[in-house]
Length: 354
Ligand code: AN7
Image (spheres, rainbow, N blue to C red):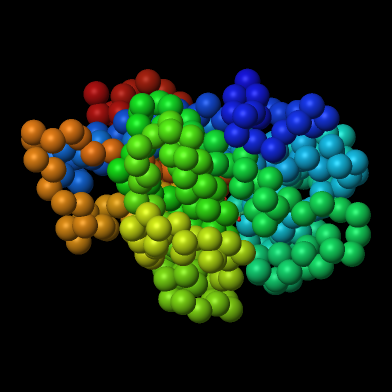
Protein backbone atom coordinates (compact mmCIF):
# COMPACT_ATOMS: atom_id res chain seq x y z
CA UNK A 1 0.00 0.00 0.00
CA UNK A 2 1.38 3.46 -0.88
CA UNK A 3 1.11 6.61 1.23
CA UNK A 4 -2.06 7.86 -0.47
CA UNK A 5 -3.99 4.73 0.44
CA UNK A 6 -2.44 4.53 3.89
CA UNK A 7 -3.16 8.13 4.89
CA UNK A 8 -5.94 9.11 2.49
CA UNK A 9 -8.00 10.96 5.13
CA UNK A 10 -5.08 13.35 5.70
CA UNK A 11 -4.49 14.06 2.01
CA UNK A 12 -6.25 16.19 -0.64
CA UNK A 13 -7.53 13.14 -2.49
CA UNK A 14 -11.05 12.73 -3.86
CA UNK A 15 -12.87 10.06 -5.87
CA UNK A 16 -11.63 11.58 -9.14
CA UNK A 17 -7.98 11.42 -8.17
CA UNK A 18 -6.19 8.55 -9.93
CA UNK A 19 -3.66 7.00 -7.57
CA UNK A 20 -0.25 7.01 -9.24
CA UNK A 21 1.87 4.97 -6.87
CA UNK A 22 4.94 2.77 -6.65
CA UNK A 23 4.01 1.54 -3.14
CA UNK A 24 6.19 4.21 -1.53
CA UNK A 25 6.42 4.84 2.23
CA UNK A 26 6.26 2.38 5.14
CA UNK A 27 10.04 2.71 5.50
CA UNK A 28 11.98 1.21 8.43
CA UNK A 29 12.64 3.08 11.67
CA UNK A 30 15.95 1.53 12.73
CA UNK A 31 17.21 1.80 16.29
CA UNK A 32 20.84 2.90 16.29
CA UNK A 33 22.43 2.21 19.67
CA UNK A 34 26.00 2.99 18.53
CA UNK A 35 24.83 6.55 17.88
CA UNK A 36 22.64 6.77 20.99
CA UNK A 37 25.68 5.89 23.13
CA UNK A 38 27.40 9.05 21.98
CA UNK A 39 24.39 11.19 22.89
CA UNK A 40 24.16 10.06 26.51
CA UNK A 41 22.16 7.81 28.81
CA UNK A 42 18.40 7.83 28.51
CA UNK A 43 18.31 8.60 24.80
CA UNK A 44 17.14 6.44 21.90
CA UNK A 45 18.25 7.27 18.38
CA UNK A 46 16.05 6.09 15.51
CA UNK A 47 16.89 6.25 11.82
CA UNK A 48 14.02 6.78 9.40
CA UNK A 49 15.56 5.08 6.39
CA UNK A 50 13.93 6.86 3.48
CA UNK A 51 16.50 5.42 1.09
CA UNK A 52 14.23 2.37 0.95
CA UNK A 53 11.54 4.16 -1.02
CA UNK A 54 11.00 2.91 -4.60
CA UNK A 55 13.41 5.38 -6.22
CA UNK A 56 15.72 5.46 -3.20
CA UNK A 57 14.72 8.73 -1.54
CA UNK A 58 11.98 10.48 0.45
CA UNK A 59 10.89 12.38 -2.67
CA UNK A 60 8.57 9.50 -3.65
CA UNK A 61 6.13 10.33 -0.84
CA UNK A 62 5.55 13.77 -2.30
CA UNK A 63 5.76 12.71 -5.92
CA UNK A 64 2.91 10.19 -5.66
CA UNK A 65 0.57 12.99 -4.56
CA UNK A 66 1.93 15.67 -6.92
CA UNK A 67 1.74 13.42 -10.00
CA UNK A 68 -1.66 11.99 -9.04
CA UNK A 69 -3.08 15.52 -8.74
CA UNK A 70 -1.45 16.60 -12.00
CA UNK A 71 -3.15 13.70 -13.80
CA UNK A 72 -6.46 14.49 -12.09
CA UNK A 73 -6.13 18.03 -13.44
CA UNK A 74 -5.60 16.69 -16.96
CA UNK A 75 -1.99 17.73 -17.27
CA UNK A 76 0.25 15.85 -19.73
CA UNK A 77 3.67 17.01 -18.57
CA UNK A 78 5.55 17.79 -15.36
CA UNK A 79 8.87 19.53 -14.80
CA UNK A 80 11.37 20.01 -12.01
CA UNK A 81 14.79 21.41 -11.28
CA UNK A 82 16.82 19.01 -9.23
CA UNK A 83 19.98 18.17 -7.38
CA UNK A 84 19.11 14.62 -8.45
CA UNK A 85 16.58 12.86 -6.27
CA UNK A 86 13.55 14.88 -7.30
CA UNK A 87 14.36 14.19 -10.94
CA UNK A 88 14.74 10.44 -10.32
CA UNK A 89 11.40 10.34 -8.56
CA UNK A 90 9.56 12.59 -11.03
CA UNK A 91 10.87 10.48 -13.91
CA UNK A 92 9.65 7.20 -12.38
CA UNK A 93 6.19 8.48 -11.38
CA UNK A 94 5.77 10.05 -14.83
CA UNK A 95 6.31 6.62 -16.35
CA UNK A 96 3.53 5.27 -14.10
CA UNK A 97 1.27 8.15 -15.15
CA UNK A 98 2.23 7.96 -18.86
CA UNK A 99 3.06 11.67 -18.96
CA UNK A 100 6.07 13.65 -20.11
CA UNK A 101 8.76 14.55 -17.58
CA UNK A 102 11.21 17.41 -18.06
CA UNK A 103 14.11 17.71 -15.65
CA UNK A 104 16.59 20.54 -15.48
CA UNK A 105 19.78 19.80 -13.57
CA UNK A 106 23.00 21.66 -12.81
CA UNK A 107 25.62 20.28 -15.21
CA UNK A 108 28.15 17.95 -13.60
CA UNK A 109 26.71 18.46 -10.13
CA UNK A 110 24.38 15.53 -9.57
CA UNK A 111 25.35 12.07 -8.33
CA UNK A 112 25.73 9.36 -10.95
CA UNK A 113 22.96 7.06 -9.69
CA UNK A 114 20.39 9.83 -9.83
CA UNK A 115 21.33 10.84 -13.35
CA UNK A 116 21.09 7.18 -14.39
CA UNK A 117 17.59 6.98 -12.93
CA UNK A 118 16.25 10.05 -14.72
CA UNK A 119 17.71 8.83 -18.01
CA UNK A 120 16.60 5.19 -17.78
CA UNK A 121 13.02 6.27 -16.99
CA UNK A 122 13.02 8.24 -20.21
CA UNK A 123 12.76 11.76 -18.82
CA UNK A 124 13.81 14.67 -20.98
CA UNK A 125 16.99 15.54 -19.07
CA UNK A 126 18.49 18.97 -19.66
CA UNK A 127 21.72 19.96 -17.93
CA UNK A 128 22.30 23.71 -17.63
CA UNK A 129 25.61 25.48 -17.15
CA UNK A 130 24.61 26.83 -13.78
CA UNK A 131 23.66 25.75 -10.26
CA UNK A 132 20.43 24.34 -8.79
CA UNK A 133 19.03 27.76 -7.89
CA UNK A 134 19.40 28.92 -11.49
CA UNK A 135 17.82 25.70 -12.76
CA UNK A 136 14.87 26.23 -10.43
CA UNK A 137 14.24 29.77 -11.58
CA UNK A 138 14.19 28.56 -15.21
CA UNK A 139 11.70 25.81 -14.37
CA UNK A 140 9.51 28.26 -12.44
CA UNK A 141 9.33 30.48 -15.51
CA UNK A 142 8.76 27.53 -17.84
CA UNK A 143 5.90 26.09 -15.80
CA UNK A 144 4.36 29.56 -15.58
CA UNK A 145 4.30 29.92 -19.36
CA UNK A 146 3.52 26.39 -20.60
CA UNK A 147 0.94 23.76 -19.66
CA UNK A 148 3.44 21.87 -17.55
CA UNK A 149 3.05 21.25 -13.80
CA UNK A 150 5.91 22.10 -11.46
CA UNK A 151 6.77 19.14 -9.21
CA UNK A 152 9.42 20.76 -7.04
CA UNK A 153 8.45 21.08 -3.38
CA UNK A 154 6.95 24.53 -4.03
CA UNK A 155 4.08 22.41 -5.32
CA UNK A 156 1.95 22.06 -2.15
CA UNK A 157 0.99 18.47 -3.01
CA UNK A 158 4.62 17.46 -2.59
CA UNK A 159 4.55 18.72 1.00
CA UNK A 160 1.24 16.94 1.60
CA UNK A 161 2.70 13.60 0.57
CA UNK A 162 5.98 14.06 2.42
CA UNK A 163 4.23 14.81 5.72
CA UNK A 164 3.16 11.14 5.85
CA UNK A 165 6.65 10.23 7.08
CA UNK A 166 5.95 11.96 10.39
CA UNK A 167 2.69 10.00 10.69
CA UNK A 168 4.62 6.76 10.23
CA UNK A 169 7.14 7.73 12.92
CA UNK A 170 4.38 8.54 15.44
CA UNK A 171 2.41 5.39 14.55
CA UNK A 172 5.50 3.27 15.09
CA UNK A 173 6.70 4.89 18.34
CA UNK A 174 3.19 5.34 19.73
CA UNK A 175 4.01 9.00 20.36
CA UNK A 176 5.94 11.86 18.77
CA UNK A 177 9.73 11.85 19.17
CA UNK A 178 11.36 14.51 21.36
CA UNK A 179 13.77 15.63 18.64
CA UNK A 180 13.58 15.32 14.88
CA UNK A 181 16.81 15.85 12.90
CA UNK A 182 17.08 16.14 9.13
CA UNK A 183 19.19 17.67 6.35
CA UNK A 184 17.92 20.93 4.88
CA UNK A 185 18.34 21.86 1.22
CA UNK A 186 15.38 23.50 -0.47
CA UNK A 187 13.60 23.16 2.92
CA UNK A 188 10.53 21.31 1.66
CA UNK A 189 11.05 18.30 3.89
CA UNK A 190 11.41 20.17 7.19
CA UNK A 191 8.23 22.03 6.22
CA UNK A 192 6.45 18.75 5.47
CA UNK A 193 7.49 16.96 8.67
CA UNK A 194 6.44 19.91 10.81
CA UNK A 195 3.08 20.03 9.04
CA UNK A 196 2.63 16.30 9.62
CA UNK A 197 3.39 16.49 13.33
CA UNK A 198 1.13 19.53 13.69
CA UNK A 199 -1.79 17.79 11.97
CA UNK A 200 -1.39 14.66 14.05
CA UNK A 201 -1.47 16.81 17.18
CA UNK A 202 -4.56 18.70 15.99
CA UNK A 203 -6.33 15.40 15.41
CA UNK A 204 -5.37 14.15 18.85
CA UNK A 205 -3.08 11.38 17.59
CA UNK A 206 -0.09 12.76 19.55
CA UNK A 207 0.20 15.08 22.57
CA UNK A 208 3.45 16.83 21.79
CA UNK A 209 5.55 17.81 18.78
CA UNK A 210 9.31 17.34 18.49
CA UNK A 211 11.94 20.05 18.40
CA UNK A 212 12.97 20.29 14.75
CA UNK A 213 16.75 20.18 14.18
CA UNK A 214 17.69 21.09 10.61
CA UNK A 215 21.23 20.83 9.27
CA UNK A 216 22.69 22.53 6.23
CA UNK A 217 26.12 21.89 4.73
CA UNK A 218 28.58 24.56 5.85
CA UNK A 219 29.30 25.81 2.31
CA UNK A 220 25.57 25.94 1.49
CA UNK A 221 23.96 27.31 4.61
CA UNK A 222 21.78 30.27 3.59
CA UNK A 223 19.27 29.88 6.44
CA UNK A 224 22.02 29.72 9.07
CA UNK A 225 23.89 32.66 7.57
CA UNK A 226 20.68 34.61 6.84
CA UNK A 227 21.74 35.39 3.26
CA UNK A 228 21.43 33.89 -0.19
CA UNK A 229 24.58 31.92 -1.04
CA UNK A 230 25.42 32.73 -4.68
CA UNK A 231 27.91 29.92 -5.21
CA UNK A 232 27.04 27.13 -2.76
CA UNK A 233 29.65 24.45 -2.14
CA UNK A 234 29.54 21.00 -0.53
CA UNK A 235 30.25 17.41 -1.47
CA UNK A 236 26.70 16.63 -0.32
CA UNK A 237 25.38 17.57 -3.76
CA UNK A 238 21.74 16.87 -2.82
CA UNK A 239 21.71 19.86 -0.47
CA UNK A 240 23.94 22.17 -2.50
CA UNK A 241 21.28 24.88 -2.55
CA UNK A 242 21.87 28.58 -1.93
CA UNK A 243 18.35 30.02 -1.93
CA UNK A 244 15.82 27.55 -0.50
CA UNK A 245 12.27 27.86 -1.78
CA UNK A 246 10.70 27.09 1.62
CA UNK A 247 13.07 29.30 3.61
CA UNK A 248 10.33 31.03 5.66
CA UNK A 249 8.49 27.78 6.44
CA UNK A 250 11.74 26.21 7.65
CA UNK A 251 12.33 29.12 10.03
CA UNK A 252 8.77 28.79 11.23
CA UNK A 253 9.21 25.07 11.95
CA UNK A 254 12.44 25.81 13.81
CA UNK A 255 10.97 28.63 15.88
CA UNK A 256 7.57 27.13 16.68
CA UNK A 257 9.16 23.84 17.73
CA UNK A 258 11.93 25.45 19.75
CA UNK A 259 14.54 23.75 17.58
CA UNK A 260 17.58 24.87 15.62
CA UNK A 261 18.87 25.10 12.05
CA UNK A 262 22.64 24.85 12.00
CA UNK A 263 25.47 23.84 9.72
CA UNK A 264 27.80 20.85 9.58
CA UNK A 265 31.07 20.74 7.66
CA UNK A 266 31.79 18.30 4.84
CA UNK A 267 34.27 16.54 7.15
CA UNK A 268 31.57 16.09 9.80
CA UNK A 269 29.18 14.81 7.13
CA UNK A 270 31.70 12.22 5.91
CA UNK A 271 32.48 11.14 9.46
CA UNK A 272 28.78 10.46 10.10
CA UNK A 273 28.45 8.83 6.66
CA UNK A 274 31.18 6.33 7.54
CA UNK A 275 29.86 5.81 11.07
CA UNK A 276 26.43 4.88 9.70
CA UNK A 277 27.99 2.43 7.28
CA UNK A 278 30.54 0.74 9.52
CA UNK A 279 28.92 0.92 12.97
CA UNK A 280 25.19 0.75 12.17
CA UNK A 281 25.10 -1.11 8.85
CA UNK A 282 23.17 1.53 6.94
CA UNK A 283 24.45 3.04 3.71
CA UNK A 284 23.19 6.51 2.88
CA UNK A 285 24.16 9.26 0.51
CA UNK A 286 26.32 12.05 2.01
CA UNK A 287 23.51 14.63 2.35
CA UNK A 288 21.51 12.18 4.45
CA UNK A 289 24.35 11.84 6.93
CA UNK A 290 23.97 15.55 7.76
CA UNK A 291 21.16 14.70 10.19
CA UNK A 292 23.41 12.35 12.16
CA UNK A 293 26.42 14.68 11.87
CA UNK A 294 24.18 17.39 13.29
CA UNK A 295 23.07 15.51 16.40
CA UNK A 296 26.63 14.35 17.09
CA UNK A 297 27.78 17.94 16.93
CA UNK A 298 24.94 19.15 19.16
CA UNK A 299 25.69 16.36 21.64
CA UNK A 300 29.31 17.52 21.89
CA UNK A 301 28.06 21.03 22.65
CA UNK A 302 25.93 19.63 25.50
CA UNK A 303 22.64 20.43 23.76
CA UNK A 304 20.85 17.27 24.93
CA UNK A 305 20.24 17.54 28.68
CA UNK A 306 21.15 14.48 30.79
CA UNK A 307 18.08 12.30 31.15
CA UNK A 308 17.47 10.93 34.66
CA UNK A 309 17.22 7.12 34.81
CA UNK A 310 13.79 7.47 36.44
CA UNK A 311 12.29 9.47 33.55
CA UNK A 312 11.13 7.91 30.26
CA UNK A 313 13.75 7.59 27.55
CA UNK A 314 13.89 10.42 25.05
CA UNK A 315 13.59 9.71 21.35
CA UNK A 316 15.67 11.36 18.65
CA UNK A 317 14.70 10.56 15.06
CA UNK A 318 17.20 11.22 12.28
CA UNK A 319 15.88 11.11 8.74
CA UNK A 320 18.17 9.31 6.30
CA UNK A 321 16.79 10.90 3.18
CA UNK A 322 18.51 8.96 0.37
CA UNK A 323 20.22 5.63 -0.35
CA UNK A 324 24.00 5.31 -0.45
CA UNK A 325 23.94 3.68 -3.88
CA UNK A 326 22.82 7.00 -5.34
CA UNK A 327 26.40 8.22 -5.06
CA UNK A 328 28.75 5.21 -5.23
CA UNK A 329 31.63 7.39 -6.41
CA UNK A 330 31.71 9.18 -3.07
CA UNK A 331 31.93 5.93 -1.11
CA UNK A 332 34.79 4.67 -3.23
CA UNK A 333 36.62 8.00 -3.03
CA UNK A 334 36.71 8.05 0.74
CA UNK A 335 37.72 4.43 1.31
CA UNK A 336 40.69 2.15 0.80
CA UNK A 337 40.53 0.28 -2.48
CA UNK A 338 40.23 -3.53 -2.36
CA UNK A 339 43.48 -5.46 -2.20
CA UNK A 340 44.22 -7.37 -5.41
CA UNK A 341 45.89 -10.79 -5.19
CA UNK A 342 46.50 -13.74 -7.50
CA UNK A 343 43.55 -16.12 -7.85
CA UNK A 344 44.52 -18.75 -5.29
CA UNK A 345 43.29 -19.75 -1.83
CA UNK A 346 46.61 -19.12 -0.11
CA UNK A 347 46.77 -15.44 -1.06
CA UNK A 348 43.11 -14.86 -0.20
CA UNK A 349 43.52 -16.56 3.20
CA UNK A 350 46.58 -14.45 3.97
CA UNK A 351 44.83 -11.18 3.06
CA UNK A 352 41.72 -12.19 5.04
CA UNK A 353 43.90 -12.50 8.15
CA UNK A 354 42.84 -16.10 8.86
C1 AN7 B 1 19.03 13.03 -0.14
O1 AN7 B 1 16.35 16.43 -5.54
O2 AN7 B 1 16.37 19.31 -3.69
O3 AN7 B 1 15.24 20.42 2.21
O4 AN7 B 1 16.24 18.48 -6.23
O5 AN7 B 1 18.00 14.70 -2.16
O6 AN7 B 1 13.36 19.16 1.16
O7 AN7 B 1 15.17 20.13 -0.26
C2 AN7 B 1 16.95 17.16 -2.95
C3 AN7 B 1 17.02 17.41 -1.62
C4 AN7 B 1 17.99 16.04 1.67
C5 AN7 B 1 16.98 18.19 1.13
N1 AN7 B 1 18.46 14.83 1.38
O8 AN7 B 1 15.57 18.19 1.23
C6 AN7 B 1 16.37 17.64 -5.32
C7 AN7 B 1 16.55 18.13 -3.94
C8 AN7 B 1 18.48 14.38 0.11
C9 AN7 B 1 17.98 15.19 -0.92
C10 AN7 B 1 17.49 16.88 0.70
C11 AN7 B 1 17.50 16.48 -0.63
P1 AN7 B 1 14.77 19.55 1.08
